[in-house]
Length: 499
Ligand code: URP
Ligand code: ZN
Ligand code: ZN
Image 1: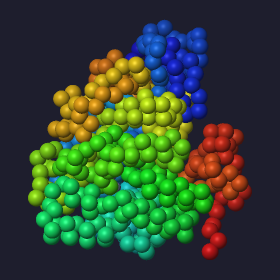
Image 2: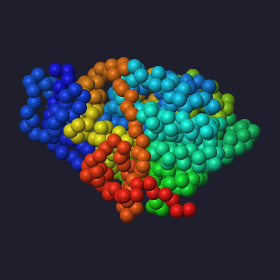
Image 3: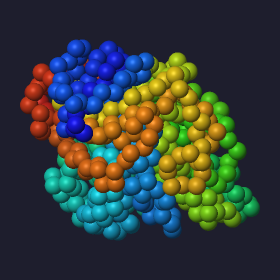
Image 4: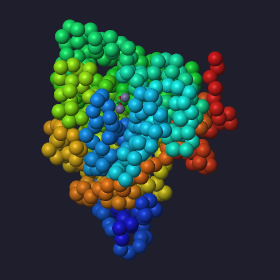
């Protein structure tokens, strides 16, 4: 039957262990795992001998069907999620992006309309705060209580950036609600001044982009965001870090007790340090020209200074990128990565020996599920979890190219890169959507997934290095939580800072 599937003879990789087990799936859920399973007749069998079986990738950072910098991304919720599945990603978390001044709730409904009935895999939303007001504060509460949103993103750059006092209030509201405060950390005021000076001197081409946003401009904002989060004891998520210096600052704040997570993008891991600036690779923060960047960032992922890898997929065609050919501040910012993230990280991380297959699973799936409160429904291969599964051939290679990719965008920043690690079967909620290399997605098959808040964040101050968010609102199994999160729950659930 369509609803029953047995995956045999593969090597199951979870964050914490690697086992040789068969997996029996029924109605979209993993029902049994083990050897010599007794299963109903008529079940489809997939032989995964010699292959890894991984939890489906979760991309925590995408922008599909997004109107930005005077134009709109070419990948929407259909083409984007189709491409995601082709590369081994079975869930995305996209961004509701209100226009400056627009109501958060209106924007949320718009994005649900863009995604519902279109997405081929499951999806959730973060919500951006493009301005700050008492109304925004109230809308945040409604979004967390009624609409399954548990994270908000604030910008420290772009013309919709928040100032420090607004960031403080926004972080405070996140802490009150049990939501995660995310930041895009770059000092927007410095960038604007630098850009003016460069343009005045006749530096108008794409090389001006990174020149106007040097590494320290990111690092300064990372530090400031950490300091502000510390004042109100808000858990902080640093999106799209691109430099060693930023990671060192994050590391210091975390060892001082700040609860913070760091994300890096596939573009930084894949092509930093090896590029001449051109219109097509413009993204913010920039893909760095510093040749040490990919190795440094991969090492921070290995040592848990960084917890996860996203794509920041935000695709514009070459013709759209041309809008900024005479002025680098007008180049629509964003690059691809949703389809290729898994292969790029495998190649640069596992194939090079910097990380293990289990750590690969943690940074491409499990940590996103944990941080955004989707775990253990998502992010692991376990009985009771959604059957979001990738059968991964680590021995095979593929060469990335816009000629063969599934995204709508007309170029690929990883063009020509050969990667080990090829998704051969991708199972989304029990449905085989990539079947021995053949893509068989269904538009609208994906569902919106609630990300409930964590209120309150519970932690034991004696075990600071194992800090992980804990969901306590709808899980009562404290033993399970202590086991899965390696953390002891304490009586006083709402730690308050001593001022
Ligand atoms: O350049 C980027 N990253 N475009 C998307 C918007 C953002 O900052 O996430
Ligand atoms: Zn951003
Ligand atoms: Zn982004």
